[in-house]
Amino acid sequence: MRNLAILGSTGSIGRSALAVVDEHPARLRVVSLAAGENADLLAEQAARYRPQLLAMATAGAAARLRDHIGTAVPVAEGAEGLVAAATHPDVDLVLCASAGTAGLEAALAAIEAGKAIALANKEILVMAGEVVTAAAARCGVPILPVDSEHNAIHQCLHGRPRGEIRRLVLTASGGPFRTHSREAMRAVTPAQALDHPTWRMGRKITIDSATLMNKGLEVIEARWLFDVAADRIDVVVHPQSVVHSMVELTDGSVMAQLGVTDMRLPIQYACSYPDRWETSIPSLDLTRLGQLAFEAPDHERFPCLALAYRVLREGGTAPVVLNAANEVAVAAFLAGDLPFMGIPEVIAHTLDAHETGPAASLQEVRAADAWAREWAAAFARGVELRG
Ligand code: MG
Image (cartoon, rainbow, N blue to C red; front, side, top):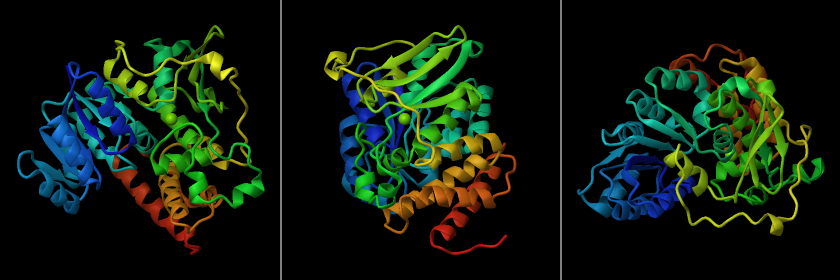
């Protein structure tokens, strides 16, 4: 029996994780659930899964949840509530799937408490890859990737030593604008960008997929998860999203993991690893698909990908700044305050203005994150900052 904490249980990944629990009630038990603002859905989940602890991001949401469920289950709130859900003594596996950067402290607290981590929130490694992987190594806890590409690589490697890896190849769907001209991309609306061709996901990651920043963040994530240098991590556009990623080994052999596009599969593998469990997920029908296509990414139309490689070369706080500026720019785009092609512009400008320093402590990470958010927001508003 694995005892789960699910951080972000009302989001897309969290709901898929609970669907995995539904299929394996004798193997998986929910101990704690944490969500942002959606008290209605968390109340439903609490009634169904009977966790021992609930957490909500704000006091207002926590109060709404208590109105629904009474005092039967304790409701924690805010950043401390997320940490409490992640470190509950009965938990042994923490699924980190809360949106954005709020989950970083909770993930670190879980690692310090000796909990295994199933990582869906890539921002945690993008921001604090050095801090998080050092803590995991020190505490002897595994970080199991849930992101479908990294989960695929994890499956292909299956414990193979790092010295046998020649190259990692992350596949990208290319998003909804894969075949758009540069001109057409200037006029893209939030509604168009939110309409992803192969994956149903949350809003922020869907925009990241449309700019290819999602793949850029995944290159950074792969660098930390598998301890492979950026110049040995490639990205290939693969519109069908059937090959979830590949590993080229030292002898030139390429291992690939294929599957239907259903996040229950990588979530379940993170829960079952190193075993495999049956699922109700339908089989992949390759003859119906007929063809699998691969093409090189267009860096001119998708400058975000090159920005991710740039921050890996710069190291230190540069990835923190990339991530923060991207979050600000995506929020401004979704609010209708920034054009689509303004997203890479805001990020590049913020990186140009940043003086890279070390990112070996949480304080350094947080300081760079706060600085970048302020700069990016001002630049997105058209305000010139000095210094
Ligand atoms: Mg992914």
